[in-house]
Image 1 (tube, one colour):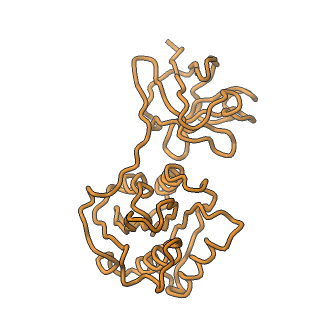
Image 2 (cartoon, one colour):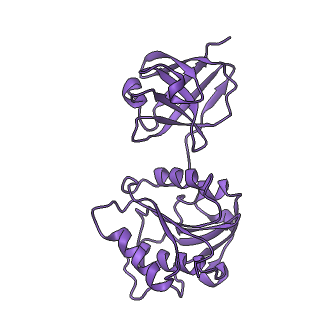
Image 3 (cartoon, one colour):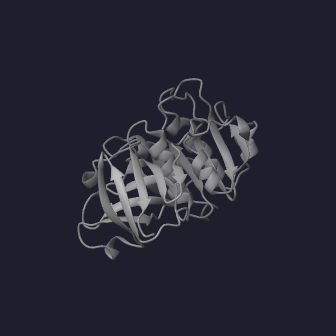
Length: 266
């Protein structure tokens, strides 16, 4: 019989080494019926923010699941390992802010336990591979429908490490936003929530000392080839794209750079 919830697995392990496969092998041994979906293992090494944003984007539509997330530059230090419940889902990983955006998207943290010393951990546990020896066993435990309380020691959700994101400055007809990341297509995801701007179709975009005309459009193809589009991204953020091109290259912008968007329709 299949497990109650799939395990959605994200990490910065990459695809060259055995790390992601080792975690999957542990899950298969402990819970053979578990369904594991590899979201990505291509998060840049140690980039907690990029991992958190990717998790949130999946949580936007994935439904009840166990999220196994390992982007853990502090592995082996005093940072906690945690498992938490948010809505109908569970999230397992390091307490470094990685899980918090997705947890909010899922309705907020209802319950959290410290799994650093869980009885579920594999022994001897490697200090530098908690993904395999700590988090994978806890994820398998939860995917089988077993209680969160038996995975670790409870603590107050307010003690979780929160992820800090840049914040946009909104004014009449203008927003000073920041690039959260550029995806592989060169689209620039901004720190403004989708649906937050009530701008007209014609906008200007200032970045790197240059100003470009753009359209607030529903799709990439709604603007001409090579033209700049401002749109509501599928992950729930505002973003910039160039139809058949790269907004990152056109604007010369990347992570944390400021982008000023002005409403030109009025």
